[in-house]
Length: 446
Image (cartoon, rainbow, N blue to C red; front, side, top):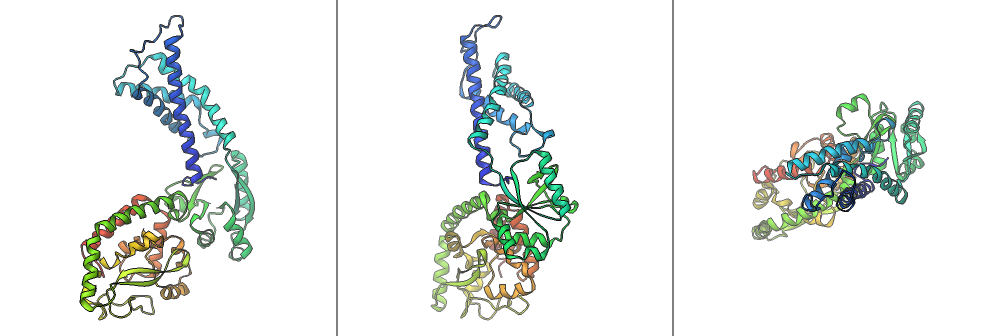
C-alpha cells in the first residue's frame, strides 16, 4: 500500500503525469503534421495559417489530457475491477475539454484534429504505462496485519479479490497488550514496511501502542463506524473497505521535508525582521542587572532526547520557573521575574532565541511545546502516553499553546498535540504561526 504522502508515490505520479503530458504534446504534433503533408480523399491539406503549432495550442491539448486522465481516475490508487478507469472515457473527456478550451481561448480548432488526437492517444497511453511498469515496477510491500483471526481472514480475502499485489502479508499479530509488549513483536512491527490494523473495534489503546512502536510514520487501519464520523481522508482500500492513516504526518516522508523547509525559510525571515528586538532585549537585560542576556534551559525534544533551549533571561537566579507537584507552573509574575523580563515575557520576546534551535534542527516553528525533563518524568507516571508528543520536533508555537490556557492540564495538552500531529497541513502551520504572532503583539504573554 503506497501512502499518498510517500516520496515514492509522488515521484511515480510525477513521472506518469509528465509522460502523459508529453504524449498529448506529441500526438498533436503527429496529427497536425499528417494533416499538412498527407493528402487524404475528401480531406484537404491543413495549411499552417489555419492551425499553428504554437505554445497555447500545444499546452491546451497536453494539459487537457492530464486533466482528462485525472478525472477518469488514472492517477488514483484504487485497485478494484469495477472502478478501474477506461481510456475511452478519458478520450471522450479529453475531446470535450479541447473543444471547451478552444472556445474559451477563441481559437478555431479543426474537427479532424480535435477527434484524431484522442484516438492516437488511446493507442499510445497503454504502451507508456506498460513501459513504466516494466522499467519501474511497483514494489510489493512487506506488511503485518494486526487483528483478530476472523478480521485477518476477511482482509486477506479482500486483497485477493481486488487483485492488489502491492501488499504481501508477511506476518499476523493479534491485537493483545501482552503480544504487543513482546520485544520481538515490537521489533518486527517497527522494521516492517507497513502495518495495517484490520480489527477496527479493538481496544482504542491498541492504536496508541502501535503509534508508539511505529513512530511518526504510524500505520493504516480499517475504519469503524465511529471512525468514519471523524476520518476526512481515505488512505487506501482492502477490497472495498476504506483504510485511514494513523500517523504523525508532519514527522516523516515528504511532509517532514516540507515542514523543515518552511522552518528554515520562516526562521531566516523572522530573524531578519526581528533583529532590532534582539539588540534591544540584549541591551536592556545587560543594563538592568549586568547578567547574561541568553540562557539555555533543558527541555525534552524529538524522540525524548534532551537539548538546551535558548531564551532571553527574564528572571533572577535559575532560568526555569518553579513547577508544582501537580504539574502547574508558578504564577506568571513571580518575585524572580525582572522588570525587563516581565516585559519580554508579556510580548514573548524572550522566546526569540529559540529560532537558533529551529535552525539547528532541535525545534520547529510549530509543534508541541517542550517540557522540562523533570516535569515530563512526573507527568509520565500518571499519563504514559505523554511521550507520544516527542514523535515530532517541539515547536515555538503549538496548537495547545494558542488554544489552551497557560496552566492547561497535561492530558488536555496531549489531545491538542495529537490532533496537530495527525492532522498536520501547511495551512495549519501558517494559521498557528499567525495566531502566535497576533498573541505576542497583543501582549498576551505570561
